[in-house]
Image 1 (spheres, helix red, strand yellow):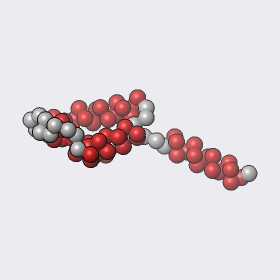
Image 2 (cartoon, rainbow, N blue to C red):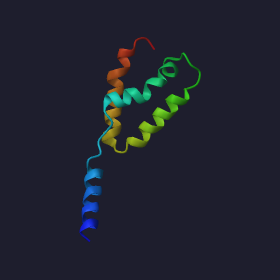
Image 3 (cartoon, rainbow, N blue to C red):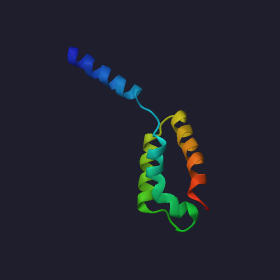
Image 4 (tube, rainbow, N blue to C red):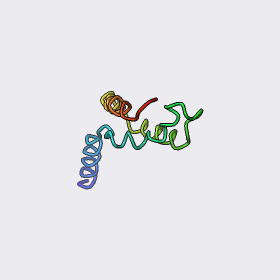
Length: 82
């Protein structure tokens, strides 16, 4: 019984410790999408789709989505003309 209680406590701690992906993680996951975003590529690359899907799976709450949005708003102006 004690092991079950400890296991449940760990699960609760892990789920509570979830946080939005950091900006460097967002940037790394979406970096393969730059050619598509800039219009240099007609279709997104498989790496772009994979990174976007992985990021989407890790962004669960409105707060997470806002953090990703703020990261993109901060990062996109730094990549030059697009």
